[in-house]
Image 1 (spheres, rainbow, N blue to C red):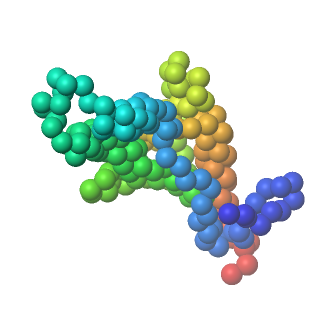
Image 2 (cartoon, helix red, strand yellow; image 1 turned 180 degrees about the vertical axis):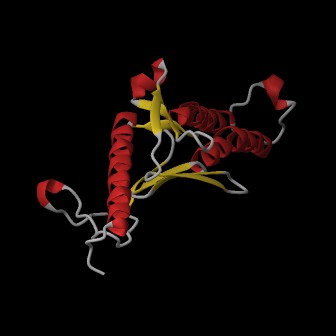
Length: 189
């Protein structure tokens, strides 16, 4: 998505008093490193199921007399330990627009939390050793009034932190400019 550019590569500002159009800056999911074990398990289960379909050892042949039983057990394992974690990862989404930060979470019922850039907030980043290795981190946004907004396992956390700081600055500049234009006695009506 592109924005019209003004001088210096910055997006053009709307005229004072005009509503600023909300534009999408980024939409992403948490870092996918938690899916590593699920992906590895899927490979192992697929390989083991394919191998043991015709080569099942005798002690196990008593418990699983038909090959379809082995496939059923493999299907249950894949469903519980691969598909459900993937859907849980997929159900969490972060969206950054020019006006706000939105966190959507939930598989069955959706929960959405958002925080406006214009109100301002503090940005704190926490990174564990493993998160540092993969370039991820957890961002905590707190405006002092509402409950803090936590963005867990954000990929490329430094870039996201910089983008959020820029959006706070632009949002506050626009809000201040609009407030000044509303109270300016010399403004044209």
